[in-house]
Image (cartoon, rainbow, N blue to C red):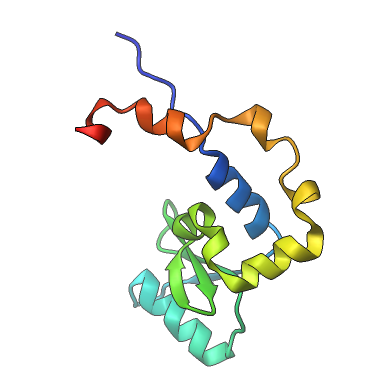
Length: 123
């Protein structure tokens, strides 16, 4: 039996396009856990929201965080829910939705079809 191909969420693709316009900072964890290293970096540098923090755990693993006005979140959460963050909404309004989200309809199915793919979702 062949493995089903994972569908790409249009919402997540849109969020990736928005986060591409946010400044990115790269740092090492040192002796701390990744989230602690990110929080310490934010406090030490007095980083203003929004920002993406790439925290390198080791040579194989990098954790991505989004620093927003509401706190520190995983970058994946921010991609999927970019419309919840006022600072990201300012980026979308500044660039323009038509320009930023152009061509997304053709690339991915809508979220409803994505949910129907998993039989257990509506049980």
